[in-house]
View (spheres, one colour):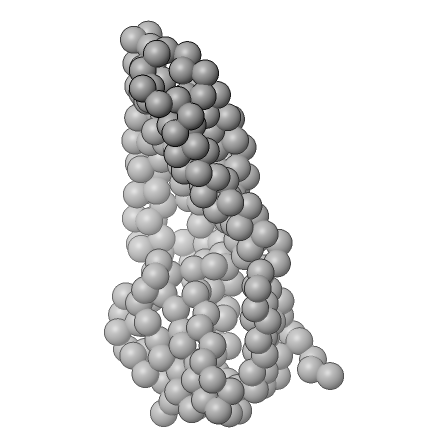
Length: 233
């Protein structure tokens, strides 16, 4: 039996966005479908068709929220002596790192990713799934465990994602500013929707209202990771 030294979970961002998405969409979706079905303001020439289209639209976002919540609770990345195991909602794959023929470092999506290939097939790991501190630990593990000659694209990856105190500070400042922008955007849209009776603005207002605290707490999490990291801040 493999001796797993580390077990990483998906960062809380996925849970928070999933919960906000399901709750917000459920409330807005029900309101919009009922409003369309009963044609409350008389603006729908075909209320039944409008209600069906809106129901399908909001159902997609609702299912996306449920998927994010399930992903948060199911995702695991286990690291052992020479093995790696990644578990998700639908997939569970374990590989022996001694049989890796190539590890390709990629600068996308956000946070970067790695593609491990060999006789076992292909295993992709999105490094932005875990917290910044855990991401650095996973990168260090892969660099130490897999021979240097098998690494492809490491130099460009390192140049883009090398963590420095200044990069961390700039990242946190940017997140706080974007969070402030979305908070102001949500308030303005909400005021317009309530005063001038524009219910169509409630959806973007709620989306901005969800993004603002999510980005703010992401900046706080980065600060906590910086305090725990070996790299001084």
